[in-house]
Each structure stands twice: as structure tokens, then as C-alpha cells.
Length: 323
Ligand code: ATP
Image (cartoon, rainbow, N blue to C red; front, side):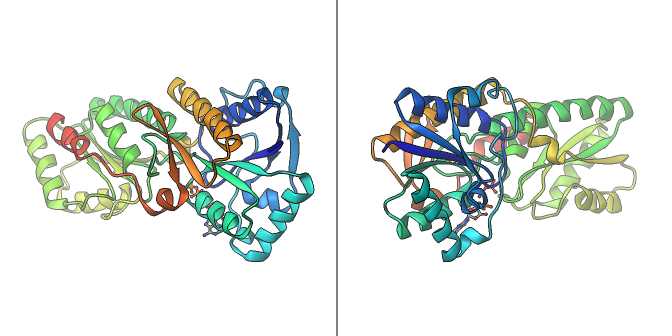
């Protein structure tokens, strides 16, 4: 394999640039040529790609977002779209791809390789949600939880100054990983996540108990996909039953997607990028490269897309016990 390509796909995540840099530099160090595909599968279909050199990735390791941009492609869902993508790869003589993205990206890669087995794709987990099976941490997660933690710390200051109860919504439509870790790290009174059924009676009992024991400033971290609703909906339910509470809501939103990647993030992204290229050049394909207990692990796309990472129940217990 002489020529490979790299792209970022699905939701962007801080650390993707560090990973792109590692892919490009590793491939060049091993005497290979690298192309950067802009906007994931959409850019591939539209032939939006360019040759990358060592200097193309200078000074990007510290940047959030992705210099290759990211996109979702409905065309790639159809066989005609994938055919176009294949023709572009053939035209450029590209035989292998490092795909940085989430499970949708890997599902697409799997379908594509079944149709075009002469193209090898290796995946790297890039999503702030940390919900991918086959890695302890995904690229973007550490930065997102630190961003959420810093924002919640700021809110805690004002919550304490005014004895207010805050519901803070963090990202996580299907997964509570961001909510859980940021709740532990900020000493939140409660966390509501999609993986656990929310018991409103229990939540109100705890908040009322605190209120009557002179603890009137509280933080409840809510994952956006919680079964009881987002922060505003939950706050409305609590307000209706406890009008004595001084309640405020904050939705952190897209601030969690951007920003300078943390040190942990940059190191993880660099390692996965380097290992992804090594694996591809060694003939490995159709796997996601992850890190489990600090060791590199290859998980077949089939498994990585079928399973989800599980929440550690000890972390939930920690929020309850330490609040
Ligand atoms: P995130 O988890 O951050 O949203 P993702 O990689 O899961 O990232 P998706 O939008 O689900 O993001 O997938 C990225 C792209 O992969 C889709 O826009 C689509 O082009 C392609 N894709 C997803 N599933 C399939 C599939 N079953 N067949 C072909 N292509 C697919």
C-alpha cells in the first residue's frame, strides 16, 4: 500500500486535529503518500481531497474542530453514492483510509468494504460522547468533560451566592458519560442520565431534604437525552411541586464541542492516529483502533457498531454517596 487517505466524519470533536497530524506524519515517516479528504464521505464523493505533506499539519495539534471539516452524507447511504466514492479512490490510487468518527462512520465503512474489498479502512473513535465499545476513551471526551466541569464550577459560584438550585444540561442524547463524570468532578447533588430511569419523587425528596437542612444551593447535571426530559422540562416539573425553590437552568450546548484539546486528549489522539496507520500498512482492516487499560486494542467494526460502552455503576454510586 503506497497511498492512503484520512478524513473526519460525523460530529466533530476536540483532538481530531492531533489525530490527523499523527496519521499524516506517521505515514510520511514510513515512506507513504497521504491525502486529506474534506467533509468525510460527502467530500470523498465530491472529489474534495488534497495531498498532505508534513507541513500541512504544522501547528494544529492544539486546535479544536478539524482542519478537514466534518459532515454527514445521505448520498453515501446509497449504493450509487458509494460507487462514486470508490471511483474517486481508484482515480487517485488510494488503497487505504483512516476514518476518524463515530459508529455511523464505521457502519458506512463496513458496508463500503463489503462492496469494494480492495479498499482497506481502519477506524479511529472520534466523538465527545464516549459511547463507543472497544475503547476506554474516545477522542474528544476528555476535553468535553473538562469544558463541562469548568462551566459547572462557574455556575456553582453563583448558585452558592444566591442559594439557588441549578439544572445544568450537558450533551449526551443517548449516553450519560459527559454528565456522569462532570457531575462527580463538580460535586453535583444529582445526575440524570439516559441509561438510568429518572425517579422524580426520589430527586424531589433529596432536594427537599437538603432545603430543610439549610443546604439551598444545589447542582443537578442533566444529560440532554434523559428520559424525564432536558434541564428546562425537569426544572418545570420540580418547580410545580416545590415552588419554594429558587430555580435556574443552563444549557451548555455547543461550547462542549470546541476548544483546545487537553493534554490527555492530544496524547490519546496522537497514539491512535499512529497505531491506525501502522495497522493499515500491516494489512489490518475493518477494525476500530482503541485504547483499553492503556493497551492498543483492535475491535472489528461489526462489534464496535453493535455494542455500546456501558456506564460503570460505581460512578453513579459516587454521585449519590458523595453529594
Ligand atoms: P457521531 O457519533 O459523532 O454522530 P457518527 O460517525 O456516528 O458520529 P453519523 O452521522 O451517524 O456520525 O455517520 C457519519 C456518516 O456515515 C453518515 O452521514 C453516512 O454518510 C455514513 N453512514 C452511516 N451509517 C451508514 C450505513 N449504514 N451505510 C452507509 N453509510 C453510513
